[in-house]
Image 1 (tube, rainbow, N blue to C red):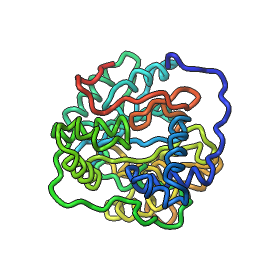
Image 2: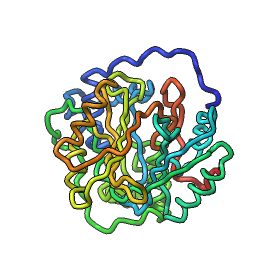
Image 3: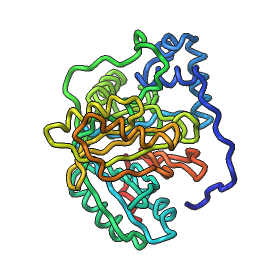
Length: 346
């Protein structure tokens, strides 16, 4: 990747218990008031706000907002093989594409693993065939579709708060939910991509509506998971420094049960059903050490009629759900999914 600081970086300090508590309170509701967050962690509202602003300023934690599968999008899982010595350059190019939301370097047969959020199958086909297949340094592309997502990063919790605190967690909203393609909905997503805690007044201005209507729209979009929010933590931290991806085959009649059991593991970051390839179940789990890989894989498949077809360690995230990272795993920027002009074509 270009313009990357290759000098050694000091390891990030471990997140403190109070930091993790604050993160978990916001994981439960990223748009909760500071009074609600403060009640959950036992501090004053100004203190909770200052601590969060420090974590954001340090690049330690942030709110990620993205379109959910409930919005009717097609989520593609794509494996890319590159000409030797070009994977960094290819990753840097692909990371600028707004629809390619995640780009990771992986071990095994693929050089890069991608997650693509496309509006429909036609857009996904164009991305795979034109933007990837026609890239001069790409020598192979293999894709499948996530037909159902059982668990993803918005379900992950830091695991330090005993129980949901009163007032934290939005109540479900009633009423019809506007489609993602509606101009007002895209305005909400655009504002929340830039700032997950964007004030209602700013969202209303972007929508061209009153604040009450904007507030109701935000609640409905989040409750229906057409728009999803989660709290992410820096990749450069010692708590969960490694990720393991598994491609599995499970009998169709046991797929839901297998996915539920895998999703119940506290370190599972993603568990999704696949179609269009050899595997029908895909999972990403966090590891505290590389030595845990075999143990976690055995734990996942124990008691299941499941066969692991392939496994891969994620060596580096160039981009994760729109946020970009340098070689030292520091967050460097964001590529919004909502664009005013046609997607960049590498």
